[in-house]
Length: 621
Image (cartoon, rainbow, N blue to C red):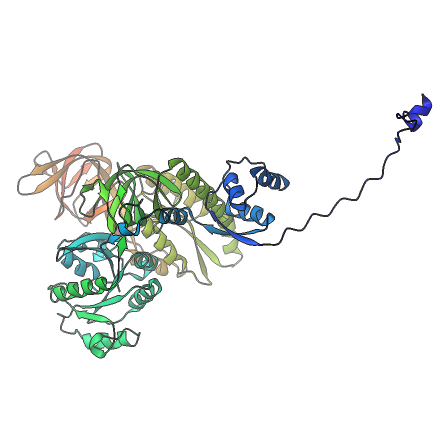
């Protein structure tokens, strides 16, 4: 009835229900978060379920808090550090984060028997200034010829080698001495037990010598000084001792605690004394490891190898690394396909303090990344995916806006500071990393240098297109452009600078920055030939059976040639002989087969590329 519609139906007992709209209550203010009463430890890559167990609440309570934050997740979803910390504080808990590797160490330490610890081989790092004889000294100890393989006689990336001395095994790390490789030297000191500081008796303490001392002190490792080149006529070991004493490295014979041994690496004088001192210093420290636990290690270097894929040089620091082990290293996971020692021999396992090449990675790790063997491969993939996503987010934030030709031209027209974008490609990750670091420091108020991309491997067409779009130059360190990239670079007018010694890069860039003038010399490519077969020739050695694929190969005049393997320069010199059948010729053109040998070089393999070129002088304006 109308009365019922107005006043509502009659309830049992004779009272009518009131249909008048009630006044809504004011919205409640959000409750303040509870006070922090405890601290919990969370591991990288924890799930919602793991977090709930740590803060001792039901998983649905954590999911409810996430829903309030407009985050719809499940109990098996991996949480990043920020989200886990935020939710934990909602339940009155502060958070201390541990990386996945740290968590593995803690978990294994709970079940490890201290009786399993055994002495391990000490790790000795050789540091010092450029050209003070570090590699020559190590070469004399190991009785191999490493120095001859380096461009300009300078070590370009970390080498790790094991040596047997008086029945004891010692691992040597040879780190580059040039100032541009400061970061690589710091990595070497972070994994070492003893530092051997090499100082030339005829040169004294130099800037890189001081840097090496600083790195060793930060790593809190003992320093042993080898005063090298005492066979030179102008050698003055006492002056070196005086300069080191001024830097708080007082020799033992002056009443200090620093062992200093005068040596001659070239003539092998006093090497036995140096080795005895190394053994004595390493005996003072208790260097132990547990070969029964899952392996942990550090990446010394990483590169992409033709036919083998990503390859990392790993120093196993604890545990034993086996072929077939699953592992996580940085943002990548993998399964050990093969282990190669420093002599190139395959291994089935690598014990603590073993430098090995590891095959089986899914990507290229960064030097300094920690390697951890895992039992749960799925968990490792979960952690790696989380790290990859975090790295992408970080890269997007730091990348900023890309420089275009229009914006660069506008800056020049308005008289603003010039900007020089650079793309760096190198043969190994460590060289690319430190080259970017050193070039970035060359900028001034007139010219700003911006590294827009670094990478490993041959210069690709994508690199050239990026350089064309951003008006950048490309610096190739021990790498070459592939054929497509070279053609695009010529068409787009992209400048590609190719080098094999790192300080030549910085010197050339300093000269070019003076008004951004062109350098005084420029390389002109003559032709390319592909090695189809390698065969032996009496009285000559190995020769390459080739077909010329572009331009012409010549040995006339001032023509030079280089051997390129998978985009990396293996050798550069002059052609020793150029033949068609049994006849010596001066030139072979495109599409014709020929035989080629290099002067004083014969390490040629099928699939290599021989590039002929000349260097021409270019007048600057």
